[in-house]
Amino acid sequence: MTMDHFTKPTPIQKKYLTPGVIVLILLALNGLAFLALRLFFGIGSVTNLNNQYPWGIWIGIDVAGGVALAAGGFTTAALGHVMNRKEYHAVVRPALLTAMLGYTFVALGVTIDIGRWYYIWHPIVFWNGTSALFEVGICVTIYATVLYTEFLPIVTERFIGHVALPGPLSRLDGVIDKLLRALERGLSKVMFIFIIAGVVLSTLHQSSLGTLMVIAGPKMHPLWQTPILPFLFLLSAISVGFPMVIFESMLAARSFGMKPEMAILSKLGAMTAPLLGIYLAFKIGDMFIRETFVYLTVLNTQSVMFMLEILLGVVVPLRMFLSRGVLKSPPLLFIAASLTVMGVLMNRINNFVVAYTPPYSFGSYFPSIGEVSVTVGFICILVLIYRAAVMIFPVISLPDKTLSPRARYTIRG
Image (cartoon, rainbow, N blue to C red; front, side, top):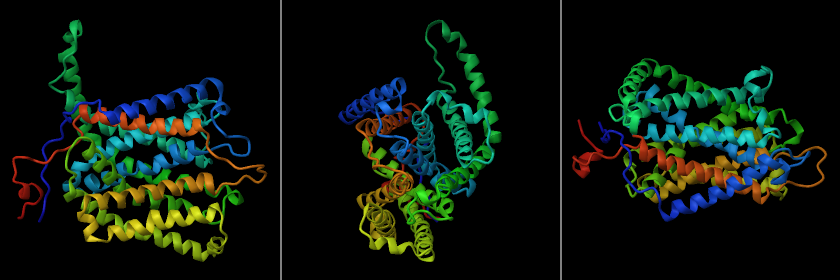
């Protein structure tokens, strides 16, 4: 029997500002400048969207791609808590933080993409139970609330016994500490409900995003338009969950000068292979049943993007995850995970942008500099907040340095 030993999750003690962080800050400020123009002067002031193409990369990447890539939160929660695989608890908190931030920026992406962004609250008040978009919106709203609730025990753990308000406010230290302890006791009794709810809600809106494109009908290219698109969206989200955890963990380890925990990440990579295999089987099987492979004989943007999505985003990483050499090699495992992440992101862009053609279009859509700047800015802000969060809160678990290097990873019993 093998078990990985880690210290208790602890805030990372590193300096925040580095040359790379400064670059991220500049890109974030550039995105915020274009975002300000969009909010004050309208969506047409910074985008190439029009009546024929009402949505673009803000929906394809920021929303649809963001929801899919935040799937690591519910897949690791299901593995670590629902299935009670304690050896994976070290990656649950980082995945939870990534999912929480991801869904926050998904909500922001939806907000800036609608024409009258100040009406974003309407779906919460004016319900439409027959709308697939309403189901996505309400599930994302509730799931984001669940994620923040799941993060609260990390907040209480950080500040219980360490409340130190400045000046006259210090009189409230004891009261706040008692409130935090009461909150911790209450959450410990009901947290299993939120964990299960999070897993269930994720399966609902991940698939409903596919439903949105099913009802687009002939506006979508046949290579992607299929009645099982909701199921394919769910399978792809599940398949990218563990690779996203690997991707995020390795980047965080590199950023903070730590060694990646290959003992855990290799196991996650091994579990990814069958998930990708199932997704690929349904994807190819659906194509042959509907005989849409004939569209691959026509050389155009759609056929090229479909082949890139399947080959680079599914077939190549699937083969890599089946290799023991890849699973033991940090660079190769990172490449396999990155290809999977890229493949699912490409799938969402293909479904929402490449495959979508309005019936009366008089041109084609290509994102503007403003659209790209806002998307890049959002990604940079997410990374900056993640870096700050792991320095403030006990999110990342470090290997137990009191053990020998060999015993640190494996204890035989």
